[in-house]
Length: 182
Image 1 (cartoon, rainbow, N blue to C red):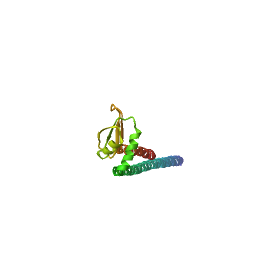
Image 2: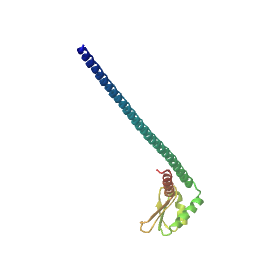
Image 3: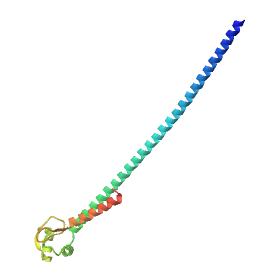
Image 4: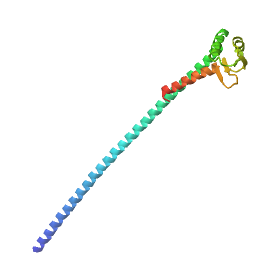
C-alpha cells in the first residue's frame, strides 16, 4: 500500500500543480483580454477624436469657402452696379443740353488757369472755342469734358467725363473692396 499512497500523493500534487498552472494561464489570458480591450477603447477614442477634428476642420474650410464665395458674389454684383451707374452717368452727361455742358466746361477751364491748350470732343468744340481764350488743339474721343495742356505739353490735365467718372468708379471700387475685406 505504500506505493499507492505515494502515487496518489504524486497524482494529487500533479493535479494541484496543473490546476495552479491552468489558473495562472486563465489569469494571464484574462489580463491580456482586459489589456487588449483597454487598448482597443483607447484606439477607438483616439480615432473618434481625430475624426471629430477632421470634421471640424472640414466644416471650417467649407464655411470659409462659402463666406468667400458670398463676398465674391457681393463684390461682383456691386461692381456690375458701379459699371451700370458709370455707363448711365456717361450717357446722361453726353445727353446734357448745350447750356449745361457749357457751364461744366467753364468750371473745368477755371480749375487749371495755367494751361495753354485745350482739347474737347467734336460736340463741345464750338462751346470751348467760344468760352475759352486757350489755343484749341483739336478733338478727342470722349463723352465730354476737356483735356488741358501746358505750353510745352509736359503737363496734361485729363478732365474728360470718362476719366473723371472712371476715377470716381475706381475710388468707389477700392472702398467697396476695403468694406468687404477682399
